[in-house]
Image 1 (spheres, helix red, strand yellow):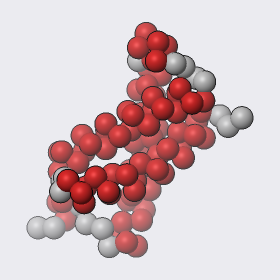
Image 2 (cartoon, one colour; image 1 turned 90 degrees about the vertical axis):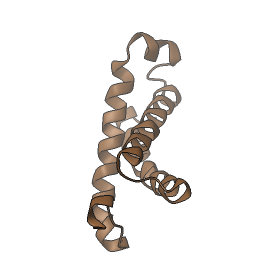
Image 3 (cartoon, rainbow, N blue to C red; image 1 turned 135 degrees about the vertical axis):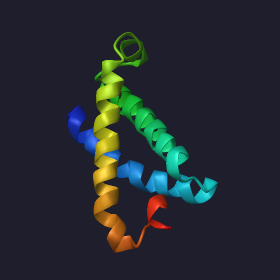
Image 4 (cartoon, rainbow, N blue to C red; image 1 turned 60 degrees about the vertical axis):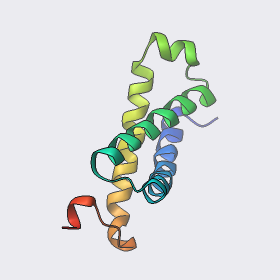
Length: 98
């Protein structure tokens, strides 16, 4: 069985296209896009914890550190991947459009 950390890294890779889709669909930028990315990371973190058996909803609610740890890993991985591919895909950050 895959370890939870490996699945969290893969979830971080999944978060990048999901965030790009949300950004284009709902025209998000700046702070709103940041919060959307955090929300996506939280949802993916809970899903990973439940699917890998690391903790169910009850464990997550009684020990939020499970969710916060996964959220940090997923969000961080997504940021690293986005920043490494944005030049190749000619993606612009909101602050770079001025």
